[in-house]
Length: 418
Image (cartoon, rainbow, N blue to C red; front, side, top):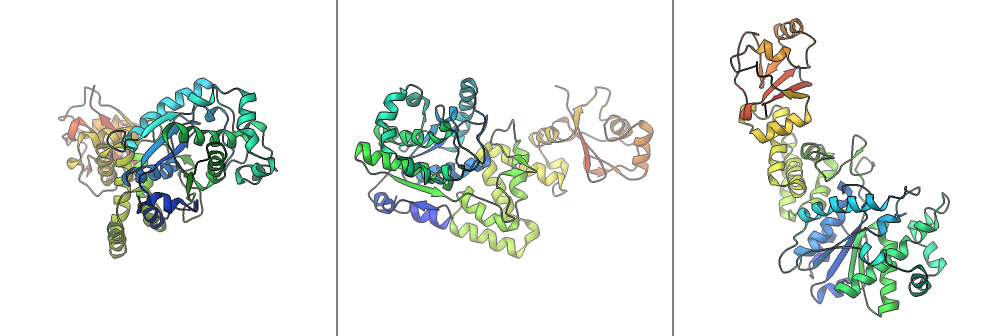
């Protein structure tokens, strides 16, 4: 555990830390947690930062705890928010919690000597009696103490409800419960959570007479100054039903050159020497984008699994003309079909059919005569090869797919019949 703090520091993942944390880590393994409120049906890419903190804690010999916010998700955290978010119904929170459970199971190891745990704070929050909570917990926090916290102070002008104002107490109570139930001594999170983290540390000291610690990572912005985790203005989700593995891969491979080294440190398990080598290679041959490819492959593999990452990489190379379409596998074409305009290939179109029939059946042309004209002008390619004669035929790609292109920006995929 003594190397954990050094590891997090060189990776740029330490923003705030309690004074005694280094000494505590030197004593041996520690249990730490991060809370995740299920305000959406999926985690998003920004959640990877605290998740990587938990993963590195586990690799260093500590025990990570994921706290699902089935209770706090009913209230809403004001941290980093300019206005109060709409309150979710209890059934929505329960549904979101169930969907997010599966994502945590891919990102952390729930078996072995340092197996991760997953708990839901609804188990201890939703049964609380208000008067008892105010007497036993609320009395330990003065109004002045709470108003000093950035999560509250930043919202005073715009307005903050008593509901959100009390969120800090609930998160502090989470830390106390985890300390009692699981011997948890460490809370991790983004820097916007520091006020909530220190409130929990104070509550443990006051009620349990114990010592607990906190560590926060800086909130990530891009080198261009924009909010991290958005792709064309849309949130980047970890659920493949909301952001496909291909789109996820493209986000990382299109990262600003100035951000790549920091992303490799933050979101991958590659060591100092390997990252230094990748960056040196990037300087020698920027067009090869070795660092970008390593980053995209690692993070996509972490979130979606190695097979999906391999297919996404292969699909990207096909679309950008770096790989012969004949060398791509069926999984890659299935992935591309989901990203591009597509249709099931009509049974009348066979490998013996002229490509004119194939092109005319796509949405890339307006009519059969338009297809003939586009072919004559050299603007059509089938399976990556320019079509010179509409009467020629073409064998399907792996898995029975056909890929039709009009120019460089318009594509259509025929999928095999079910």
